[in-house]
Image (tube, helix red, strand yellow):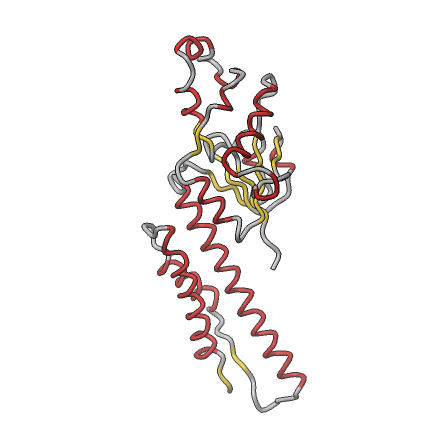
Length: 233
């Protein structure tokens, strides 16, 4: 199955902008207080947001990840420092999950993909053609909630494909062998059943560490569902 494309913003999504401001001298904080973006070194001083690095490495196993950020036009150093920041926290060369996968643009809506994780609607984010996950919002306040959402979305897609495959195999197998006396019936409410299952096993307070248990629960459910709902008539 082809991985879904997920774009990830940097500033205030995986990078703590405030941490860079705090590292500036008092003089520079006063000098650049109206636009910290213009400070030539600020993007080299920032720390990661809590949980961001670990979350992205985990999501990289299931999604095709890209950095999609914007750098200040009047601060050339920022373009260089953003790339260096990625290497500092994700490694150099091909071991880096974002190796040659960093895009800096003022028009994020021009990128084609499935999901964009970004804290603001600026620079085309709100017009992105796929799903925009607004990091830092009430719904997605941290990386734990983002990972939970994306993994649940992944599991639902996997389950739907699994059941569609089984249905097609049974349908065409039935036709090929001309088993006119035996038909298979699929519950019309299958999608609702999986949505209800997702809600039951993915409560709001679920932690990231329980995700693998959830996957096991889904796989067990799939087996039972086939056993109980694909019946001969």
